[in-house]
Image 1 (cartoon, rainbow, N blue to C red):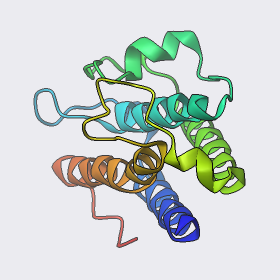
Image 2: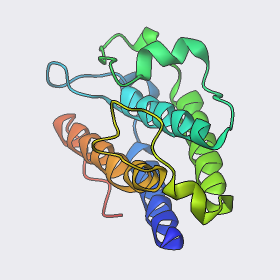
Image 3: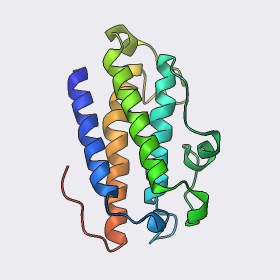
Length: 163
């Protein structure tokens, strides 16, 4: 099962690369609709979540502290481009965070996924580490990539293709 989840995660990562490939850096924080999640926030948020989840496996959080406020679960995107890192920095951080998380999940023993999820607030939805990893690597990731696809269309950009 783990191999299937990791394969789905790789498909999500490939799709993310396609979705952002042709977005100009200066448009990454554009909000064609009020409050809409934009490309910079989506990449940063996905990075934040991947980096946060790896701590479950006793790995260090690597995201710069100044990024946490911009991309945490409670953050709200703004259209102020100057507030956000460059597209290149966001992509690099995204790639590193997902590479670390997928390699850690791949190497983890099966019993690690049976443990209770450490965050009691999320435990009703994510009762175990395994359920949380499946969610983060597949549905959470895909949900935000769907937002990025919709953002592209709202920006007048063509669809990037199918994953």
